[in-house]
Length: 204
Image (cartoon, rainbow, N blue to C red; front, side):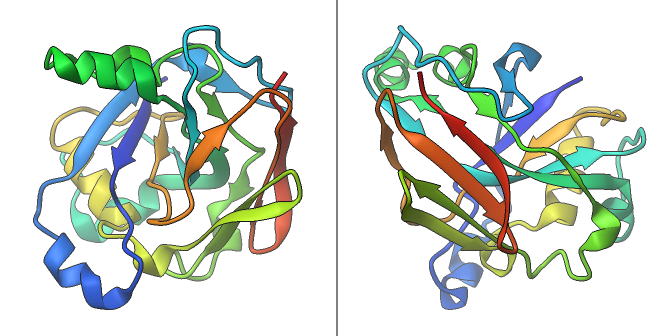
């Protein structure tokens, strides 16, 4: 099972979309050991002092595909969840200084907490899904998929041109353009899709 992430995939306003859509998607991968499920608490990683959260919708792939056509791409999604794509920003900065990869900064244990999944059939319009994140009861991020630079179908078609997508693969589809920030030990994170609380955990 692969975990695939896309970076810098949201704008603040639809007027920004055309300029942002350059055709170049920022793709990275994360190991399966980053996953935290069932709303279990997440152990604050010892390797960082700058743990940055990004709330994202997560698409689960329901069938194998390679070189998937854009018009068929959404049919490869079986379920949708909400998750946090964590980055150890200080680790990332140190790696970038040496022109190194993102692997350690994105791939540490606990870097991908995700909620339970909802069948894609429950979503009537994949380009109009609301999701949000509260930390310690305070609203931090709000997103709608209409503000994605590359939508679900475009991501799937692009990624599948490089690698075969397999049943069970997960794609973190990007975070809202505003609101990401730093967590500290003890923070309580709650993420929802269309107002339904699905992800609920603490950093311990």
